[in-house]
Amino acid sequence: MTTEPLVAPEPRAAPVSSNPQETARRFAADRVAVQRALDAFCARWCNDLAPLTAEAIRYALLGEGKRLRAILLLEASRACGGPTDAVELAAAVEVVHAYSLVHDDLPCMDDDDVRRGRPTVHRVYGVDVATAAGLAMVPLAARSAYHAARELGLDPDEAGAIVRTLMRASGGGGMIGGQLLDLEAEGVHLSLEAMERVHRLKTGALIAASVELGAQAARASHERRAALAHYGAAIGLAFQIADDVLDVTATTDELGKTAGRDLALAKSTYPALLGIEGAIERAAALVDEACAVLAAEGLLTPTLEQLARYIVERRS
Image (tube, rainbow, N blue to C red; front, side, top):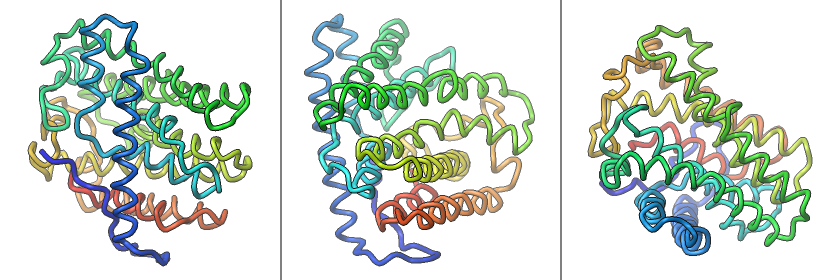
């Protein structure tokens, strides 16, 4: 499986002037830069770990990936007039995301065999090593985020706030809390409101944090941070809805992970509740909401709009 490039579709509503080819080149360059930053992360932060744990972390981090969260952070920082070289900070977000995938695939969770087009970490290294690798990635991501913030010229308090934003999104009030709610909901019919609560935490929290971190790196105002967090939360939920649709409409080869897992695990999904067309319409409405919030704050750049559109129009 080759990871689908971040090539933005044409905007549908309130179009923003841009050059799609230039934007695609920028996304591709950012992906390469983030990949290099992840390689540097492994070289810098994994030296003190048990060799097999370090190897498993490298395997989890350096495979194919969209690097969507990292690119969102970079684009949010640019939109706020901040540093264009916040790649190390962006990579720290990808480390947290990769940790969540490693643990999500474990037998005690979704028990999956394929991730990003190749065997999952626990299938290659065993459950114990995969569990340890995932646990190690979280504090290493926090250390890396703090180091990156200081390298960007933020003072210790600002760097500490960066780490708090990342960890808050990752913890019990964010991604982990959402994952727990998701596990509890297996075999249970959820209302739309309850399902969106689960996914605003499980999927949306880290995506929202990515754009908020970009704003923090740029020392943006509270109003701009709030607008970007709202944008991130909306597209994060849209991302999950699109994932649910793809789970029933795409193949394992297209997805790079096992298709049909939601049905196998008896999960409540947006297509099951709203129908495929209804789910697509809900995701599109969330993207429109996200873009409108940024437009009202003067932050709707062509790339941020295109990233939002890509989230619901992708095929993997």
